[in-house]
Image (cartoon, rainbow, N blue to C red; front, side):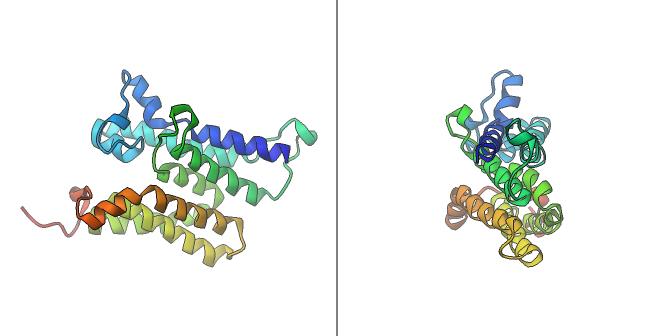
Length: 214
């Protein structure tokens, strides 16, 4: 239990390292939470700071999900002779989920973070890499048809959860991770959903196939 607690804490702390705010410091103290949508994630970074800034933000935010699941969940600790105790699949899934929670509620930045999508992507690449394929397909199709990034993200994560249920089974750690993250990311995108209902959600019209000609 001690080793599990250490891994959980390390995964959460790793998730709390916000790419948007780390890169913002390099760029002279830019805090993207004060600009655009007020979110610290990659989409707001792209809208307010441009492609290069957003690239580094995404690299950090995806990378910490990979590290939490591939390194923190599996690294030997000095306790119990360095053995990794417990079911490796469940530990990996738990560490991945906590990295996403850390991204959304970062202890180092006043618990004001992003919406979790990029870190979920990194965690998923280790927890269940095959699930990236249906997730990215759903995201891309929704985005080019609607132009809504938030809607595309939510539907993609739910698509991943359904894929994991069918492929790994409803009692698997992979599906538990997918379902928990689908519910959590739905919650973090609640403002996007409300703006969709109000008709005020921002669109990336440049990627839309069915956009109206001006």
